[in-house]
Length: 177
Image (cartoon, rainbow, N blue to C red):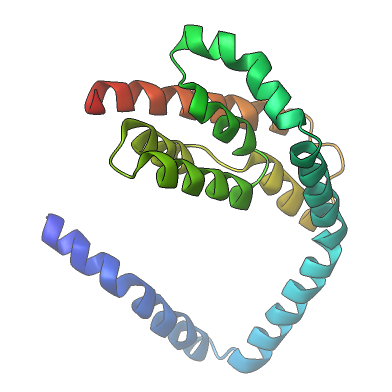
């Protein structure tokens, strides 16, 4: 079963790239024109979400450069100690919902400092894989379709990130300690 899944995972993308034009030909769709129309819509979407992305990137850079992130990490460190969250992970836990590239940079620093086989390095890697860039996702997807009131999406996304963070810590402490 595992071998079959491995083989399927290798071939699924080439099969999709072959199957989609084939289905289009069978349905008598003008494939090149449909592709060009989709690419034009994608370009318009990219232009439409650009102001939201710029605003989010500027806000994240101000948050990091002003020292507010470090101050927040220091403020949260007593609570994090009580919850079993290592202090070196706190900036990553704060940055992850804000920015994927920022959190990847912090993870790289953690792995470079502590090593990939250290508990902190493994924990940082699991956190990156178990949480998401909630603010980025809301900015891009809601900006693309023009939603200005996210309602409960931000709260639910941040709750998911928090659950992913605590699950990562629990699993890493159970497996690697």
